[in-house]
Structures are given as C-alpha cells and as structure tokens.
Amino acid sequence: MAIKREAVNAAWAQVDVVLQRRADLIPNLVETVKGFAAQEQTVFGDIAKARSALLGAHSPADKIAANGQLDSALGRLLVVVEKLSPVKIQRELSAPTGRASGH
Image (cartoon, rainbow, N blue to C red; front, side, top):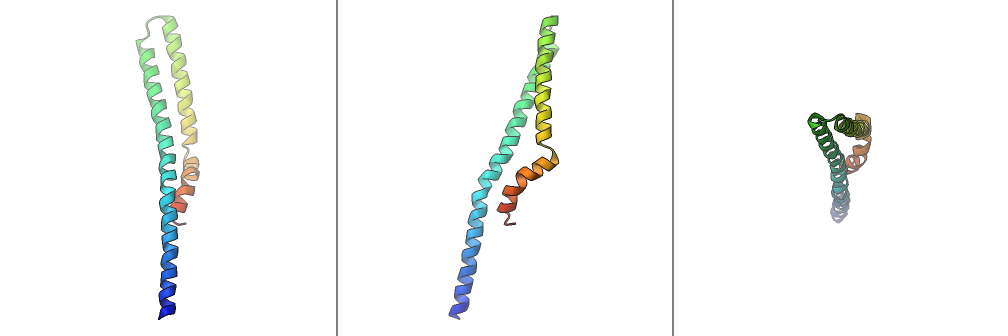
C-alpha cells in the first residue's frame, strides 16, 4: 500500500510540475497576442488619420503630402498583413500554446 501511495504522490508531483510550467507560459502567450493587437491598432489609427488628412486637404501640396502619409500607412498595413498570415500566426502562437497545453 505504501508503494502505491508513493507512486500516486510522484504522479501528482509530475502533474504539479506540468501545471506550473503551463501557468508560467501564459504571460508569454498573452504578450505575443497583445503585440499583434497593439501593432494593428497603431496602423489602423495611422490609416484613419492619413485618410482624414487626404479628404480634408485643399491645396495640391496638402493633397500630395496627405497621399504620401496614406501610402506610408497602407505600406505598414501590408507588413502587418504579411506578419499575420495564417502560417505565421500559427507558428508564433503554437510554441507557447503547445507548451501551455502540455503538448
């Protein structure tokens, strides 16, 4: 009976280790997702500002400058889209989630 009790205790100790490791990985996963979201919000805000500037521009010089801002913001959006491709997202998130889920 004592041998079985020790085996159960050892198994639970292993479970505790896995659960602790999983809990330790959650902040990394959250920060990864926050990083994607923060970058997107900045780009979306920049696009909105540039679009408003373009629509509000009156002189040709203002329109040219605003169009340049919009081009730049749209270029950053394309970079975000490339970074957020399904394959890249899966690769970025699979390591922490795989470890966090115990796989």
